[in-house]
Length: 218
Image 1: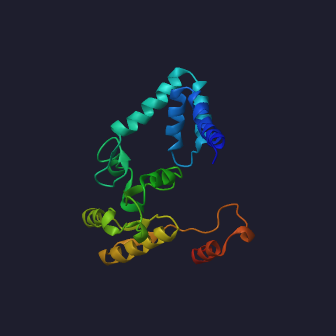
Image 2: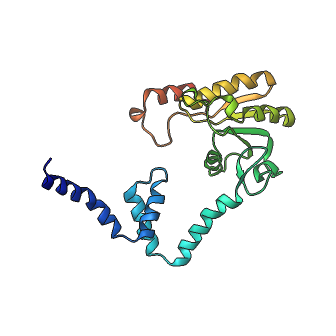
Image 3: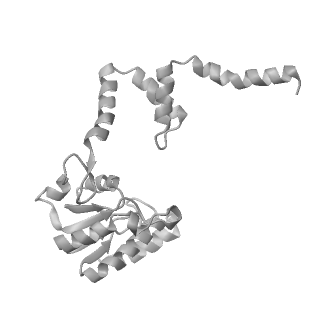
């Protein structure tokens, strides 16, 4: 490569750096931090940052305080492994919740999805993940032992397995069903199939199969 070509290439490669350097440092820093969040790319991160720039300082401060608070005040419940400010958590101590039913979920975020329905009033148990040999995650890495101990101590009459309907979720549900069967507790699985408002011709074969298997009397 000639000296002229080399200098031209160097100038082109330095152009993005010069352009970035013309943007305020705090703006670039926050864009970079937002870009680390799941599903947030650089463009979305930039939109969020410039939105915050146009908002009152009090709103930005409230956001910053809320982010710091979840790291300072939120902990894991020692009984069900949900997230909480108090230990044990309100799900475990609320006398209005049915202590005879425990819903097993993979992550704490799944609890809030179920709570939005207002259709469940029992207790929860968070596994902390799903069985995934490819990722080196087995029962020993999950809160399975603690679930067995809870069943022995609390004597619930039903365990609802609410893991996702994917390979890892199915493997985890099958493992738990076999493990818990000898304990004399009823083990059920969340039904899944056709969504409300969906059309048969848009459903895939697996969804239709599960819908047929989960059919019930009217």
